Length: 399
Ligand SMILES: *Cc1c(COP(=O)(O)O)cnc(C)c1O
View 1: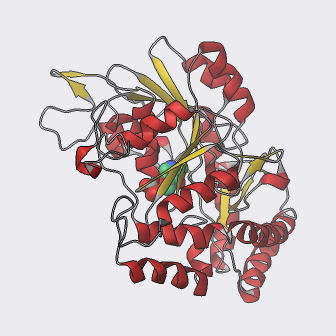
View 2: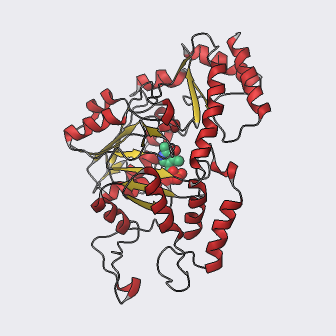
């Protein structure tokens, strides 16, 4: 999965071009930068690659979510619906925007359950954030149809699914916007970094200005200092070194995905031999970015027994039901409402709790997670590593 596996001359060359100008800032420095605008170029290339009309680079995938929410006008008093199986960043961004996260169940896609989404919509819902977890598609068309019926914008958290598509269309282009992460363990990486893509020019303009302290970016004789602003913003600017890295990594993305697909197919075949095994529902195998293989056993007990054999044979799988960063009941700080803020914000307002989370509120997801095992698929898997895992899976099949 991580793009750092393929760092090479291309990344080095891109980064060197930035150092040769000495300009790390994405704006200004007209003469000194000698026409080198790496972040801008990366935005253009990413938009072209995904088929979106606009792309806004930011500092991280978390920032991308925050910028998208802010540009959509989400704030205090609002609810934003996301799924109970995601990385903590998704709901951190919702709280940071002032809103309250509401969590849905996931289904066998390991992504948002549309039926549960429908139940969780209230007159306070201001955005819906399905997450394309573990590299593959949420039921984005169904989710979008439900959202449209209620007039609520969809932000696709595509942090884990760069390069993934549904019926040929890139994930992140179905909703009002799609957010990406290029952190150190993502499929394509700029070290830290993120992107928001959209086909809505006005939304993009809001994001562009919001992410840069409100600068309106209208060329004027006073330069940057003379620019106006329409509203308050913040600083989520990507810098040139990251843009340079992004250009080199984006050019390798489809090859990385192709390589992961081959490895995933071999692991899937080996896992198929386990009695009672089933696989996560992938809506479009061709469009899967194949960063992970997720398989389900018939019960939590069987999953634990299988994983014990896999561990004993040097190939333990990830059990997201136990993992503390990605699954709802394991977020103890969310459950407890732990915050540094002296008055309890964002969990409390004026001495009263705004929201209390029940760790048992998502029984369907919990049941699913308890019997799901996951392998991360590296871009380059050594033959002996593949042999170790397939041999361990064969042992588990003979259990
Ligand atoms: C990684 C990730 C993020 C956050 O991205 P960062 O660049 O690490 O801030 C958001 N959502 C999901 C689902 C992620 O996996």
